Amino acid sequence: MPKKVVISGYYGFDNFGDDAILSVLCDKLKALHADITVISSNPNKTANDYRVNSVKNFKLKNVIKAIKASDILISGGGSLLQDVTSLKSLLYYSFIIYCALFFKKDVVIFAQGIGPLNRKISQIIVKKLMSKAKYVSVRDRKSLELLNNWGIEAELVNDPVFDINIKEVPKNYAVGIQLRNFASLTDEFLNDFADNILKQFSGRKIELFVFQKSLDEEICKRFEKILKSKNPNVETKIIYYKNRVETFKRISQLDFMLAMRFHAVIAALKAGVKVAGINYDVKVEKLADEASIPLISLEKQANDWSKIFEQLKSLKPSDLSNFASSKHLDWSGIEKLFTV
Image 1 (cartoon, helix red, strand yellow):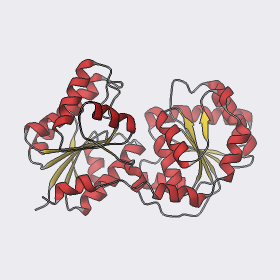
Image 2 (cartoon, helix red, strand yellow):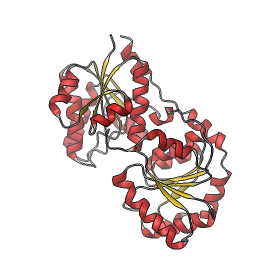
Image 3 (cartoon, one colour):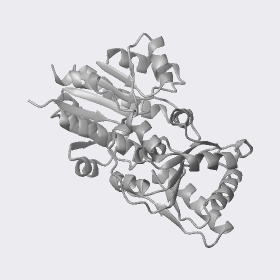
Image 4 (cartoon, helix red, strand yellow):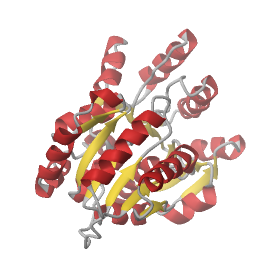
């Protein structure tokens, strides 16, 4: 009889990275013949997109019913167990895990980033829940060290999006820019960035990628206006697909990508697109270092643009895709739950 699995995460919000993680997870669970239910803010869309069962995230009666009927709860991926966004968010995802433990279900913490946990109550809650989980995997060393300091065994794994298969497609020779709203993303930086993009890629079409409307759309439109103000003849297009497959396809067609979001950089690497990261988060910095790709600072004076673009243009697509292919996720911890 198939194992019944409930997945809890930041799903149904049309966030490219989280949707990509969910697609990888669902594909793997289907290969293990699991009966899947996803907790989602948009259950109809999630059910149609992934061919799974889905329940509304804040219809707690239905959520609890699904967990009670399940064998395994998978919490993740992403950064669910943190209190920076809000304590309410942490309490919600912790409640889901608590319900599974209460009904004596196996709990899997899947490729999560744990923390920051700024409140003492947050630390107490997460430590208690992690200690009861059947299997814990984290996506970064800082999370691993935190759990190890608590005496909790966890496994460091690669990001699930590295396991997505991307088909080779014909190039459209465009330059992709992926931005997200961020406090230190200033007009001074955007103007400097635009000057150098227009100088280095004269005559090229510029495609601006929106990965999540609430955080990306406004800044992409603002950057488009800056580009147009400097060169009214530059061809630009804002790209936003709710379908993750179409987004991957569009990225694969690019010649170059300059991206803030972690999963935008991964998508470009997977597709063998010459890519530079924009350093708004340590995870992007670490990935750029591992993949030997250029890194752009949000501090205007810190960038040697000539060096950055020289390095970007000298990248070999095969080296990028080979690096991405080497970063498979280890599924053995989850697979063990399906052999008992």
